[in-house]
Length: 366
Image (tube, rainbow, N blue to C red; front, side, top):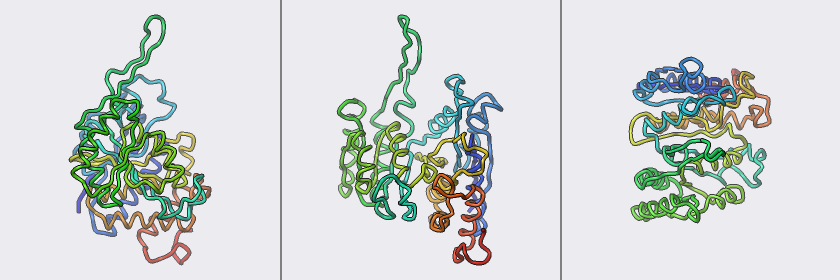
């Protein structure tokens, strides 16, 4: 297979973890006889520094014409005071919107050997396996109007929360299709006791569910869901929710894996390239220190292989290599270990290229 992959490393630790994922994809291409080409562009704060905007038209054009997009992270205090529309995060929101990437998939699957690192008791491999399907192009993050201005001598800020039935329907259809390949349960998370948009979500999702009689559906308020992610995470299968709730709940759910650095994501639409990125931020406090956890980015590359390129076996090989590295307790500092980003990369590559050789055997990286 030939594939064109756009690389937007971004800011902070973004370039560090994305570099690992590119090397992993290159190793996949060698082992399985594919041809992947990579085109890298500045994005987010790095693009602001060079071009004055977080996303240039040239970058967008290359992304739109690629088979998939691999992204690192954006933002940081350096760009915290720039004008609205020129903040690093605006580049990501614009990219999602213009490419029609309306569904964000975030799998939460703890590794058994890391169970003790989670503050949640009872988490083990197999006990928790949930998938958050987050609507990505509507809601508060894209509401209009939005402004801050002075009215009658006092500052007033407005953000609007808008959803259409069509936006809800398309992401709900995807969630039910994904549930059919899992444990056949969808939980809609909303705030229907307060928000009119949440009441629309309930109405539309119920209508969609009628076409999937083999899939169970239940409804849960977001505050209850936040509690149950900690007290009973094993009760969830596919968790469907709107943009902001999904953003917050998946960061919470990441503690089940032991670290925010462990969780990947895929942003998908009806056609065109998917966008793949770890859910963590740019972590400017550790940028350049060589200790960032690359697992979330590498697992995002595995999702790229699966969802955009249809390479299920290759995706499984990458996930298996990560699992072996974790099982061998080669952990970065966020997991309580002393591994570096580079040494974690080497262990993952070794496991990928030598699937039958354990790390303690001759030839494995130290």
